[in-house]
Image 1 (tube, rainbow, N blue to C red):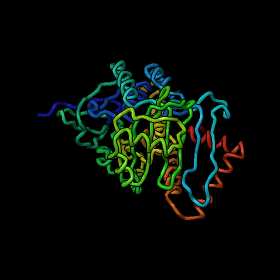
Image 2: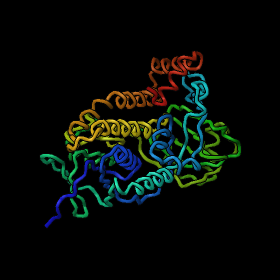
Image 3: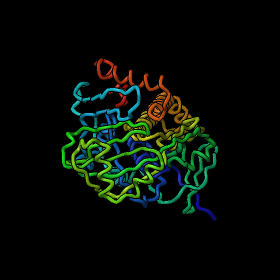
Image 4: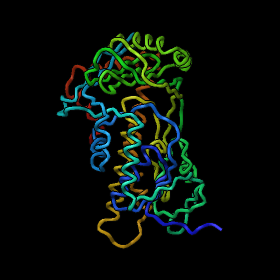
Length: 394
């Protein structure tokens, strides 16, 4: 005989950065939160660039104190056209000081990021109850949705947040369809040590097979995200460390001097998708349950935190001042879907177009891309507009 449901205002499903951030923010908004999140079992050597309001979000919720000592500042960004195409874009440099900021943000390893978020969840034990189990089924009740877990427990929640990634079980249970697509690319990710300083500057080389991006990751270290054709990534992955380091040094034009490999390697296929709706009934999608796109321009997790911040604002408005009435999860989810649709659609479309412009041999598209970057280099207001847009500034 199953146990009686445990009742919460919000159930967050997902133990990655998106789910942890959502649980923290909604608890701080006054909701009683169930976090359905098994402990992560796989090491993640990737890094995340936290831009603009993302650092403010983490500071506001007491998470940043656990990250500041291991975060690498990002003050400048360079775009270098290494495509060899007929219409080549000029090199463009974006300096945060030009828009009145000391820096754009910070680059943080995913391991410490998840650890800091997990610590912040743990200290909110009065507002967050963590269930280290897997989500199994979702049923719509009269006043709440019922989530059944692999542990045999059942949770009743007025609002359900799907933060369980690209293959979201909650999204599927809610009947929300996705539009998905693929690219003829894979990504290779690793950390590097190098002999020359990076000067807190990320460098994104645009090649005809995708971006090759070096991001500061501490003194004398950078993280690499290399997007290329699958056969190239397969070949590079088969090289020993010394040979791979020489190839990275060659492709980067020795911009960082002598290179050595400083981490295990990770690779994955590049794809994109967007949920056709961000909410349905009492279910709202955040992060990679809602949207996914290539790792270009450090947009992914920053878009996720804007999802979470929007939900936080809507939940707080729905519960303050306290009325004594239960949270109307369907109302919150509907407002969230309407609030976030344009930002999400714009980012997904923008990154998709940029990636396809690199892969395409269509001359008018190459010309348009080169002309746009020429404007960014030569016209200050255009350059500053692009910088603010990249930060997600409103």
